[in-house]
Amino acid sequence: MSASATPEKRANPVLTLSEIAHAYQDRNTFSGLGFSLEKGQIACLLGPSGCGKTTVLRCIAGFESIGQGSIHVNGQLVSTAQFSLPAHQRHIGMVFQDYALFPHLDVQSNIAFGLHAMGKAERGLRVAELLDIVGLNEVRYAYPHALSGGQQQRVALARALAPKPDLLLLDEPFSNLDTELRERLGLEVRAILKQQNTTAILVTHDQNEAFAIADEIGVLHQGQMQQWDTPYNLYHQPTNRFVADFIGEGVFISGTVLAPDKIEIELGIVPARMPEDCCLGCMVDVLVRPDDIIHDDLSPVLATVVSKAFRGAEFLYTLELSSGSRVLSLVPSHHNHALGEQIGIRLEIDHVIAFHTRGDGN
Image 1 (cartoon, one colour):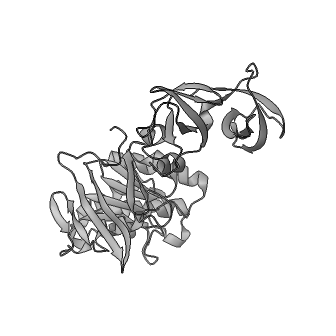
Image 2 (cartoon, helix red, strand yellow):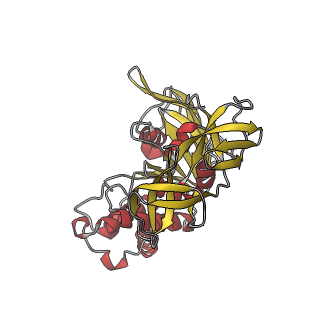
Image 3 (cartoon, helix red, strand yellow):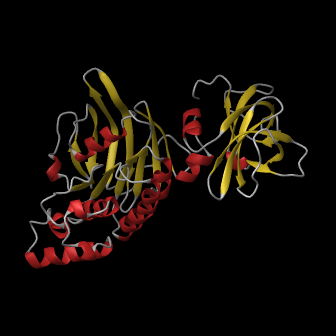
């Protein structure tokens, strides 16, 4: 998919949101929101707190009503401003932030909770299958209080997957876990969802989580879809200033348009398309990522180390250029430079993103 604020239409979508809107009293939560998911696709709604992403999930689940537009699940209309199919009839699974496990039931009974329509033998086979998938056979008789956070998360996932829902919703499912466990479980959850060919939507404010799990991501801000795209395109081809600033790390440095395909910045001339609202000679802001600035002892361009953050294999250096502008650079951690030290750098940038200096978000 090319970089776009509007998702492409699917041939036979499992989920379709068409221009939906929601408001609390007289305050809009979101409006004009539309996207669709095909079978087995994992999507993510990503954005800062208060952008409306969890409310979107609750509208899809049937816990909130929409003010306009429509929601379809597997071709069935489930929500309009005038109609809302009850949540329990939508065949949608949900994993909550706090897992919401039943404390009086053991692991296997929690997983089996939504399988009352199955016969005893079929139910037992499904539970056994999921225990194996999520790796919890050894604790099948344990109660939630005796489980680690990661194990509780797996139980919640298995319980949501047990009835084979058409769609699975995950509301910040890793927020209560430490960083290392969150990253590992994110990869495990993606593998499980792909193995089960489950269509899913994750809601999070954590970019690393979104990038690790989702096939495509919708960035929300102030109730509007800013861009729906692959993680790669969000990082390298942001469609507006908010997405460029929100996704990943980087800084904007001033540049001048020399030609339709050339922009001059302090560190050199870079090949780039000038913004549509620019002309030759106009000033632009160019996004420079930490991986665009390479530490090179042989370079004549020097920058001063202002601060540094140790990240194990790398340092994230904040460097001050001769003009006073600052850039970020990821440098292997065996290059341990002192604050105030000058180091050689060179620009190695493949995806140049530039915006007009007006700073109006275009």
